[in-house]
Length: 206
Image (cartoon, rainbow, N blue to C red; front, side, top):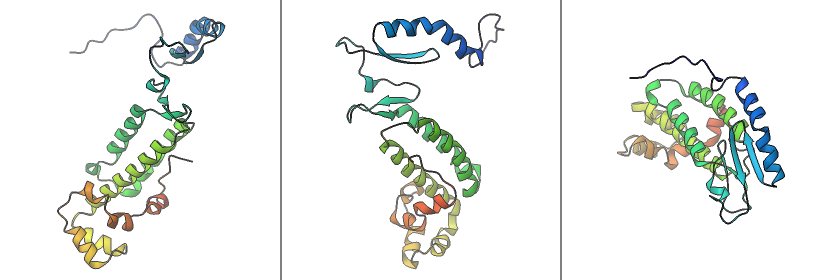
């Protein structure tokens, strides 16, 4: 059972004055870290300090900060953290649920709004390969969504998209599930990358 209690002191989390007040309080911390020559990064009350000591708690590539981390190789470049990528996938899964009954145009319109915001935030990442992998995964989710949506009309849809008769028939009658078929050469041919790009699906890599 949840209990609600009125707050009479402090600043509500997420309120506009919260980051301002945290900066005022933690300014002295910034000055002390600078005086000691430490490399550090702070956003409001979220802070990480990087030192060269062998007794440091963890390596930089094992730490996460505001959705980012560092690569263990390639000169410790900035990359998107695994939890941030998984959170992105969770949102895509939610938007691509077949039970929502939306058209592919509406699904991509919703994805576009979300992905452009995500890209604007994470675009500073220097390692781009994880984003490219997620792009491929998103297009596969959309192929799977369309195949499920087509249902019994899958054969006719494939024929209209230029798939040869026998290949379309074999795919439509396949015992494999939609997710496995979404990776098949047939659906890649019928629904190439440009198909989704023309519908407005953005890329995650500039």
